[in-house]
Amino acid sequence: MRLYRLVLMAILHASLALCQGVECDLHEYKPLDGLKAAVVAGELQVTWQGEGDQQLRAVFAVVKGQPVIRELALHKGAPGWKVLARNLSPEFDVVSGRRRLSEQQAGPLRALGISLTPEVIEREKWNAFWDAPLEVPGTPGTNLDLPRTTQEIRRATASFQAKSCRVKTDGARLEVTFPGLSLGIFAGELRFTVYRGANLLRQEAIAKTDEPSAAYKYNAGLKGFSLTTAHRVVWLDVARTWQQYEFGGSVNTDPVALRARNRAEPRLRLVSQR
Image: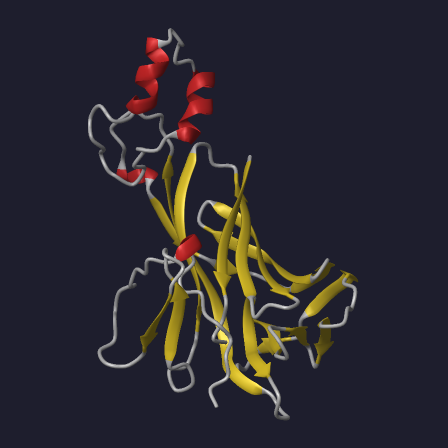
């Protein structure tokens, strides 16, 4: 059994009806200055100290088993909170295939007189660089055990059956975890983490699979930002330079790839437009 952590980091430029009350386990929660959580009117409210004198707030709820961020807000200087977004839904999609040993690895092993036993293949295939598990049927001479089949390739989007959450204080960070995540061959939990002193909300799927030789790639994000309040997206590119895109014009019907650092796209800062 292998454990995979599917991670999205979002530094966020951050009512549904039929919302069920959230039952949260707070046994591992310890209130700290600048890092607090409380269940208020059936919703989990997390507040934390951000960068400088900024205060941040995230309110979590569950709607028909789906964890949602009911509100993201920022407070700085003047009285009152500036609401940045409401009713955001976490999203994950995954495509999985089967990992194979590449001939680039097999050749040197044979040259060293190492037999390609099942044990050797199992160990070495995880180091394959030129594996292409989504390429059907595959190029002859590139991998062992070709051709691939379309039945190997499975695509899925996340579904949730959350009924509760757990809150844990871990040093200067606070974790909110929702069980009941299903994502194709994976199953596990959805977790949000906030950090005292940072305008950071981390969203990740912590999931495992019993599927052997699993190769996968995934996308993760938050759905529901309103273009009337969110005017631009800002991200850190591979050269550590901040880039931005102003919303407007024609609507993209397909995903748009960004060259972003740490494979996180976008990295959005929680800011208040005044």
